[in-house]
Image (tube, rainbow, N blue to C red; front, side, top):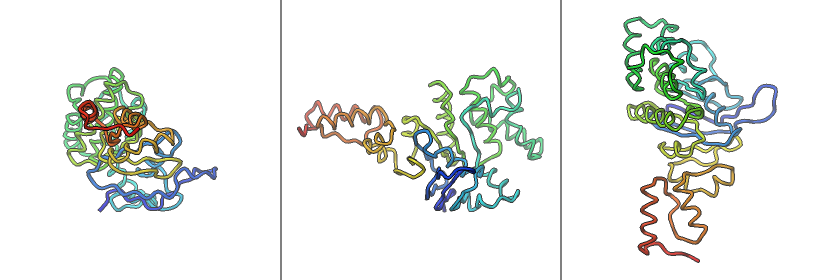
Length: 284
């Protein structure tokens, strides 16, 4: 059974007549790692907010672990938001208190979690994001990557089964992006379902599955190798591809019969080696 089941989802913001999402059908299995790509205004962030029940579908339905986000009863929404943890773009907007461990405990205090259990969860969450040594540190003294990891720890302390992250690395430097991606892959290896909204192609290439949104509809959906080999299609809607795939695309335009399903540097080097060894011919 899919942990996220989206059926004929359409969404229109109040006071407008523009469909931001148009008849989206999408199923995500538990334990998957899905990257959602799309240019600005494509609807990818709106999709994230429909999954975590911030937005209610205009038409269609979103089921999270069998619960409909259209049921706005307090009990139902609380259960959905326990299941889905959300992390947003700006880490500074997500930190509430001035001390790291207090920030991680903030949501648990609001839920009335027993102090002994709370202590255990906070310690576990900080350990999972490799921030245990910073438990007593002031949040304002952390780097951007560290702040985002603390934001993730605060969500993990609530023990969600799903993490939805809306461009969590957009405001980070390369080191911070690498730190956050490492944490996400480790959490996914432990069984947490990850839905990552991103505009970084190299981040998307590390996912198990990519869903590309364009003008509110799903343009293409599949493994990274499948999605990025359609470089021409992605470029036609203003999206880039990883550098290795881009090189293959340019070589194809020059007539070389190279595969387009190339993502990593290692795969790229193997193709170039085959080219110099005469294993790849030029068509024209």
